[in-house]
Length: 263
Image (cartoon, rainbow, N blue to C red; front, side, top):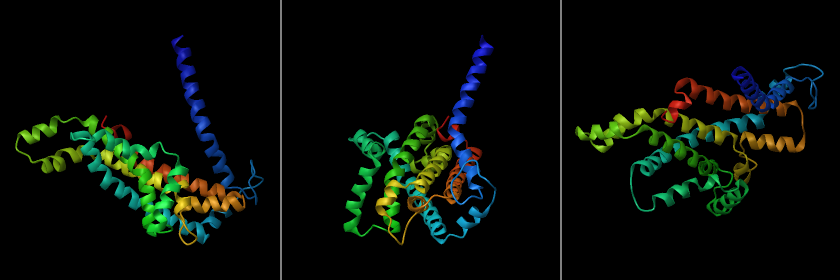
């Protein structure tokens, strides 16, 4: 009976992973199609769509913009999220719960409503179709994730070592830099990486902020699909998946997600 349950459990897990990854596998296969339209299975095989994507100035400009914005957003999410998470976990002050809820509010708001609100605020400020505007828009979405991850990591670390260091005469800043921050580094890497992935793949908020001269890669893909469908779309999807997967693998190999959450 135990062996049967074990086999059924493994089969269930395999079925779940198959359900998740089968669409990605189909996209990967289509990206090597020689056809001029989307079809599965392809009638022939070719790498021409990969070379076409690499030679497309619009997509390459979108890739560059997305990479720059994702890097800036990841850094800012850490610089703003780490002090906020530390204050929410380690300090007691009036309105702490309210501030926590306000930081996490973008996670529960519909993306369309959030994008429209940002557009109404950014238009008078001249931030539409600018790098600062896109960075701020993405930061609104990524900051709650960074704060939440860092909060969880800090909560799981405990305070024993910090209290021991301060008992021995270490100042608060010295304790944070030499004791807390090194132990928090896996969470720092994980939160920054997730912020970069979320920013790189973001499309809903970006659609409200981009302009004809400045657009991200997901927006460029969206506008291309609106006009035509061919295997180049599959190539772009593979590119986005590969970049996100590479970041996840780097985090897992370097620190591991279990350590990232202080476990």
